[in-house]
Length: 471
Image: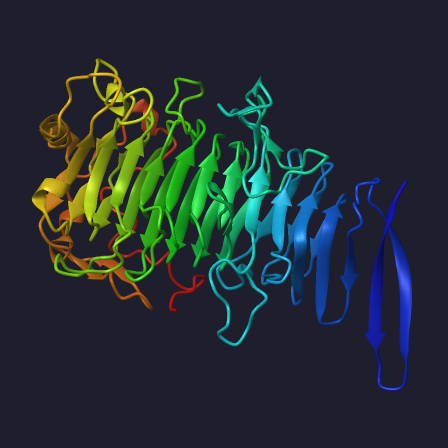
């Protein structure tokens, strides 16, 4: 049985001493360990037994750090965890293990870059990856319902695998947490994100989480059923909210703020949603519900230029059945794109007696061209008869309460495009305070019924205080 040694170095005025304490890690430490000094703690290798990171300390992730073999990593309020830039520090919570990161509004838990003095940049470290045992439509080595996480984190012990049959699986808690400067492209289309959920179950708690300056997607879900509330994507490079491989959770009260000058060469979107990369009919189907989202795009005015790689407020494609309710999208080059070009045509999820893709109670504003407010990309292999005109008519169905506005000023936010201090307070005459879609439908159960559209109500400040904005 292997043992991990925690080395405590204590410096005093007249002498120094060093002692070793054995910690049984169930044989799971693959050459890593935990070295503690008075100022900081270096985390590396595998954490195979329960470990608590204490308030008042700063910790550093060196290389890929796995929490494995059923261990729980507890992080106390106010702790700072640095991702080592040189080794691309990354934290991976493997299947069956947990993270218990419960910060508070006045003492958030912060994951950030090891670079200091203004030198931190997007992509300095690998981010936070959580892998669970809920259902996914991924396939790995011919086994349906099992997937391999992106970003090169899998190893010979299978620590990068995800998926199972337990939709109530519990991977722990993230509450009042900030994740900054994370994510990078390991290979094309094999990236690490700011925060990635792989088949994470709905026994997991995710509330009040900000991902800022991510070098790929801010949040990405690959299958699973985890719910989330009060989340923020701030100045990410690629997509804000990316859903794949059968994700079916519910997310309410979400904010995305883009940097008009920074976008990904692949094309940056607010939402990007696939059933899977092939647009297949594999189950479970991506059918997540997002409600009360405020997505602030790159164009404060219709004449603003910004980075030319910006694309859509929401691209729903590849047989996804994503639903978006009571949300507002400001200043995107294009509004909603129903993309049926790959796999089973996405518009088939809209038609019929029981459509599975919903777009209701939403506001699109500030798109430079009216023809780009709602777009449709036809299938190249299956003729459905749908056209761009059909997509627009569907969007404008009176009972759906959707709204198209020519300018962002018409939305009535106080200062949505103030990047360093966004103020999303809706004015008294804002259209966001009326025509919200009703929450009575069964698919919206579990969401908080509110009478406004967007992430913030008239007297709401949930996105301030524990968060960080700026450059």
